[in-house]
Image 1 (cartoon, helix red, strand yellow):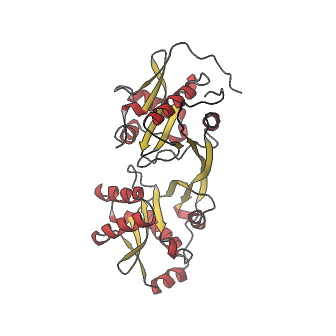
Image 2 (cartoon, one colour; image 1 turned 135 degrees about the vertical axis):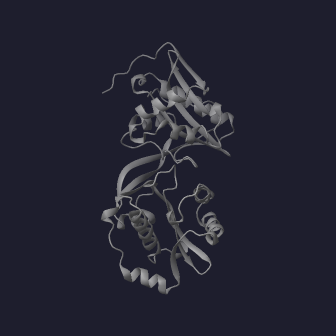
Image 3 (tube, helix red, strand yellow; image 1 turned 180 degrees about the horizontal axis):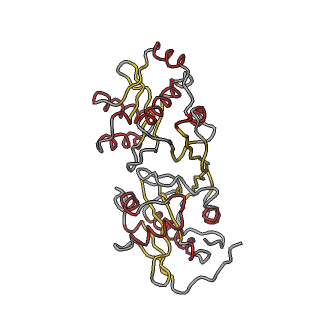
Length: 324
């Protein structure tokens, strides 16, 4: 059991100042070893985020040096706790509570009605606290009034273990007029419209960013019928990470016909042919339709995350006396 130490006398909670970057990167990689990031990647995701504001990045200083941080973001009336961490040597002193309390007050001041500790777009950097690795963070969030509203899973597969797709499934879909193809100029606009209509603006933006960044056309696989897009699968689109798969989805009205499985297999086969050895993604709902499609393709669960949420009524955040 970790020993709780007294709160240090020289603790200061403030907002980001230029020059904090190296401290934040060091704390990130020490405190979140399963989510390590090269400093340049972290800076690009955090400081260049279109919704980044200096007052939304809360810093905890101990004896004049940053010892923890909380990255927040605001979209409309919803506030995100994108990520937070306390340096391992400075834990059990109340810094985590102080950071979260300051962050929640900031979100309330910005007019947020709820706070979510979950994956935030466009960063998609942390789906929420890892149920196993971030147990202390989960306890602290619970003490501050957060509840777990959902558990999601990260998955990975070894592409050399990709099971063969029954040729009958592909032949049947071809007979129904479906074609599997890679992205081409004629499909850019229909794909964006399809994703916005059936999924989200965030996913459509991810595809458009990938195209603007010059991602190879073969990294965006499509299922089409006539002039209509029926499904899409993307890989290697985030931060030049070639093994990262997703997003991926098919028209809900066409599910149950094997289209998702065929499209997923087509994309994974393209990854394998490009020399990739693994495919991984950060989250999906366990036991949902997509999860079952992934399992049939050989994906295994690697991590579990809790999506945490609390309402933000008028007044200051509070909670029981728990510290991180």
